[in-house]
Image (tube, rainbow, N blue to C red):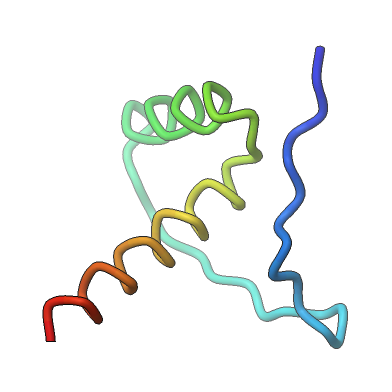
Length: 61
């Protein structure tokens, strides 16, 4: 079993704020499967997803 990739953009203070959302168990399972396929934790996968979307939106401006 391989180790999940670490987030290269970690908080410099070491204590980034948490963010909680409610999603269906089915959606969480799909997210976890996608994250695992990328070799990432669910949290890192979601952060990458958000960063990629922000970059995409910035390019559209």
